[in-house]
Length: 327
Ligand SMILES: [Mn+2]
Image (tube, helix red, strand yellow):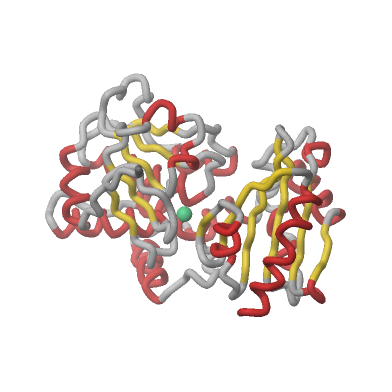
């Protein structure tokens, strides 16, 4: 039996933030710019409320995102042990990685998220219409401003929120971008942030390892369904000596090909399984991922299948081709 948790209103979530003691902010495993940017923004928000927050994640902070925490005085998770635990951009217990052993069940007080599909593990503020968890943090900050609990959304906080939204929208390119996303971005720019520098750090500063990973991904690109599906299969050997961090830009290669409607990246994991990441233009890939025991967003989803990456691709292709027919 699954336990059910209340969905909180914006004000109830604000109340929880105001009442929080020694906060610990959690990001999902394999952290991306949204989970880190939203977490940094929340930690900054706490510091403006005179609370020294800790940040925790099952995986290390990627180098290119380190700037988000640069000006922040943090507590360690040990110092804040027993304090109020808040997860950001974490849709399901599995996404907490090894931290789920520490905090689940029952140890998380609030989930702040924007995923349409997930398994709540705490009282939650989930806004599926938000392009990023960072956008939800912005709404919380805005409400705390209205309530007089926060003086301003300052440059460091605005920068972290902007980085979160930019990350989850591919620099404002994806279909999740709405007029509201741009309104929030405009308000953030008005605080005086350097959006150009943030986007340069996020998108235009690849390491030699990232370029090496892109080269491998290009050599593993295959095309299916008359060019409508692009796939990159990566074995453990392909990834030897390179980290997930290094492959972060490589995974965009199948999606960048003209005519591709569904892009997949299939990564071999230890233990004879392969992780499939799906991105689409229109097709509901969340439904496909769910059919294989996974989940996610309509246009960005994933699942894990047994076998090599080639086995996983062979297994999922017919369902993807069928989904293309329905789109
Ligand atoms: Mn997100």
